[in-house]
Image (cartoon, rainbow, N blue to C red):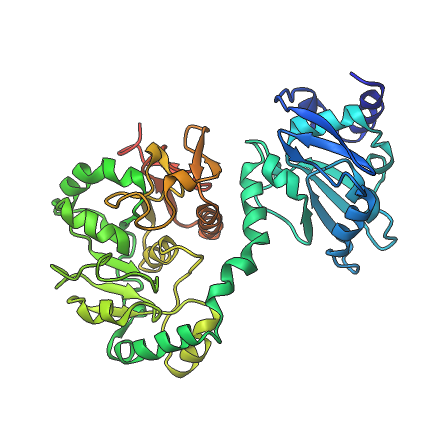
Length: 429
C-alpha cells in the first residue's frame, strides 16, 4: 500500500473501525487511467471521475446546488475528496455525511491522494451508502459514481438516480398541458357515470390477493395460476391492463383490472369477455377504452396536480401512483383489505432477454437491445433493465416499507429483487 493509504487508513481505523475492516476487504477490480489537462483526474472503467481542468471550480459549482442554511448535508460518492473539502468551508455546517458508493474505488483513491484533512474533521461521518435503507436530503450525488456504484450500494444508487430525474420524468404531466386538459374533459362524462373506487375498499378484508404485472416471469406461472383460479377458495386476482390480454389468452380470468396510462388503447386492453370484470381507472385513460369496457367501472384519482381541480369538483378516492400501473394495483389490493399480497410479473427488468409477457419486443416500450442499466435479481446477479423501471422499483419498495401490516411476496427470483418482499415458496423454490 502507498504512503498516502497508510495515513488515510490510520484516520479511518481510529474513527470508523468497522468501516475500516470492511474497506480492507474491498477487492473489486477497477481499471484506472490518469487523465491530464490543466488539472488531473482519473478515468475509472472508462468513466471520468472529476473535471481534469479545474476540479476545485467543479466542486464549488456542485456545492452551490446545496442550501446554505441546512446544518446537515449528504454527499454520495467520494470522488477525489474535492466536494467534502469545499462544503467543510461552510461555518454553519454541523455535519457532513459522506456515503461511499463504490468501496473498491474509494480504497483506490485513498492510495493516490492525501484525504486526512477532511477525514479528520469532527463534522464528517463516513459510511457505506448501502448500509442505510434509503437516501437522505439535502444531497449531492457525484455523477460519475452513480455510474460506478458497486452491487452493495446499487439500491441507494437507484434511489438517487430516481430522485435526480424526478422533475424531468414529470415533465409530461404538466397540469397546464392542453393535451392533458382535453383528455380530462373527454373522460369527465364517463367518470361521472361510474362508481367511486372507494366502494371496493375493505371488501376483501384479511384475504390474500395476487397482483399480476406483465413482466417476463409471468409466463412461467400461467399453468399454476389457471389451476388456482379454478379453486373454490382462492386469492383475488388483480391484473394491470397489459397483463389482461395474455392472461385471457391462457385461460385465466382476472377479478379486477387496473388501468391508468393515457396511451393504453383497445389493442392493449380489449373489451371482449369483460362483461363481469370490474375496471379501475383514472381519467387520463382513453375514453374509447373505457366506454368499450363491458364490466363495471370505478373511477379514481392520484395525488398528482393534474387531478387537483377534478378532486375538488368531483371527489373520488385516490390510489397511489409512482409511474407504473403496478403501483395503483398494489395500493388497491391494500385498500381492499389484503393482509398478504403476492406479485407476479413485477420484474422491473428484462430477465430471459424479454421485456414483457405476451407482447413482442418493443411493443410496450424500448426493446431489450436498448437496455443500458442493471438491477440485482433474486439471486444477487445483475439483470438488464431501463432507467424508468428502476424508478418504479424504488417507488414500490418505499410503498412496501410504509405498509408493514401487509406481507408482500414475490413469485420469481429472475426479476429485480424487491426490498421488503419475501419469496412465495409456492412458486419459488
